[in-house]
Image 1 (tube, protein in one colour):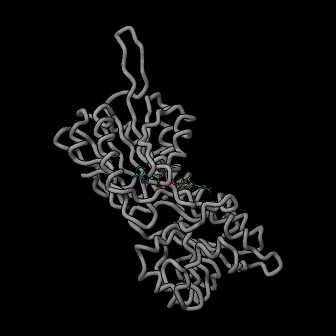
Image 2 (image 1 turned 60 degrees about the vertical axis):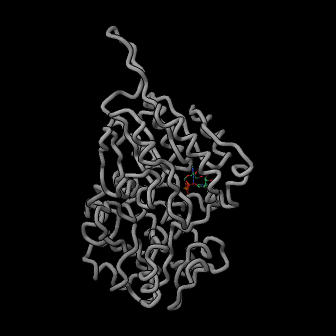
Image 3 (image 1 turned 135 degrees about the horizontal axis):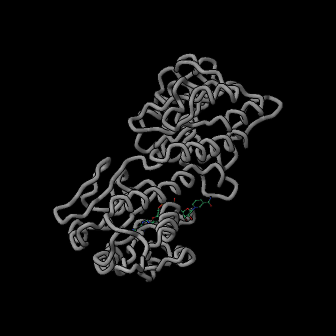
Length: 372
Ligand code: NAD
């Protein structure tokens, strides 16, 4: 079975879906690997490194020829995909339904890796976790860079520099790493979420939890561990708490997402305006509609009041080498979990809960319950 690794075509996408390490492991399973020329460039992996690991290098058509599996970071263009191949990538299915239909029409079996269930067995295949963790780290680093002041408290002969105050909104994988990174840099950190389970996690990282605790927050977490959309009454209480908190902060990192829904609006322009000049906000949810009023996808906005709102797209691509290493391992674990050693090809067990969750198309049709 040949595995094809394509060069990403989306603007600004620097990651790559395989690395020399995973190429070697695929070959160890009995597969052959073709890599499109230049695929690793954005992640600082030269073609020669893929070749040294045992891959063959070709153009797109040559890479796709006879491939049984096609690996991507973002979903590849359907044109030219070999019929019957399995496509494994972050397919962003809710936003790209036409392309999903085109995969079905092209006769490929498409797997959306972001639909991976949050179960223990799938943890090492979970691209959302591996990439969000880096997003949370990089958001704090970007904020520190844009903030014209120091993060840690410093007591010097010339006087004391006070510690930066960082507020993290949304304490999932990205938020936890943002708290940890800000603490390591010496900031005074507080954080909030709708899921009460995060309270202890915030404290264990040395952060101060800022919470609304009512009947609704006791049930704010779905069985899958995600947040629900909250009521208007809750949103009003949350807005009051944010107003009280945000004016005292130097840095705000927002990460709040609700699966399949637009990101919740957590900070209004009026609340932003209460922050001190020089303060920095990073809106990691900007591509899902934004947690912060005034954040713009792909832009760094400075308000009239001197507050910087960072809205970079595709945060993980800003750490392309590490992001690729982790992402590539997630894909390898997925493929190897379903690999049939004798047939030297994957057997996608239709009854397995992982396959049920991630398989979008098969046999010419869209088969995923959430999309069909
Ligand atoms: P996410 O990216 O979906 O959302 C980020 C955070 O925003 C979440 O903590 C969410 O509760 C919070 N949020 C949503 N609406 C909010 C609002 N109005 N105000 C404040 N915060 C709000 O989250 P995620 O990082 O994907 O994590 C989701 C869940 O999955 C968590 O319970 C996490 O622990 C769990 N998880 C499990 C595994 C595993 O077991 N394999 C792996 C990773 C994550």
